[in-house]
Image (cartoon, rainbow, N blue to C red; front, side, top):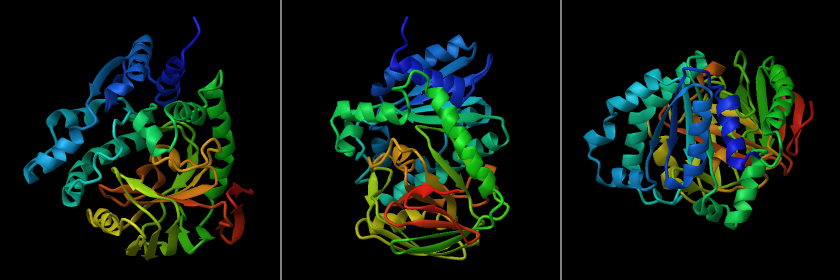
Length: 368
């Protein structure tokens, strides 16, 4: 029987991304009924692998209701079932399928910030267990009308875009992911021996101390689609300013024309042509939210334009992104925060990256 696109999608997530083994406890999470075709295919594949699936699903407006009605005590509360899941689950497969990408656009910013601070312990636990090799996780999306509208595409156009971005139009998407992995592995081996990264471009001149930090090759193991190499810079070793020309979306809100001034690893000024209040509210979330958790290079040439979905936009071929907030422990990063906001910059308009004063990237392409 010929495989459907959902069968191929599930096989990537289960066999390749999370490497599900017999006896594993696998949590499959989805945020709407629109994810059911992929959830069913993943559930079936997990069972075929001899593992033990748990499905947790919700409706897209639950977060909106929660933020509207929750007291401070409820915002701070983490239920024991979630605590247990993050302690014992072996593999996490999270499938997004939003009904409305703007459902939190008018949410109380203080409540958003408080909830992010409360749930930070869960994300920290997952990152720590992942870095220790005790858990694996992947996030993925399915096409919805909301995502298509956000991307200014028809539903059919967006579906085709999403499947191509994931290489699901190919007979063997895993082979393509392994090809990407091999190419990027050469880059990370080079970057692992670099002390300083210097990025220049439109309204941008910034340096990152990356000495001793590990670069990560992203080829479908945690995000799908994928295509990036990243690290967490030395916490006090970032200086300069950086301008993000593309819309920066986070939790249903956005900021445009963002300019950050960074001194000794802290964002000391944050300006935006639109959405400056939201920008600064998120940057004031907690002690670590004005630190820098990530610097990355996007490499997926199937993604060329902003769609309003960070899972795709941060992978844009010819872009870089920098995250305010939490670091990744597996890189050696130490910054802790409930925030991890990836901000994307187009580099195809003359952007350059120097590694220890050697030009390694120009106009959106690696040249090493």
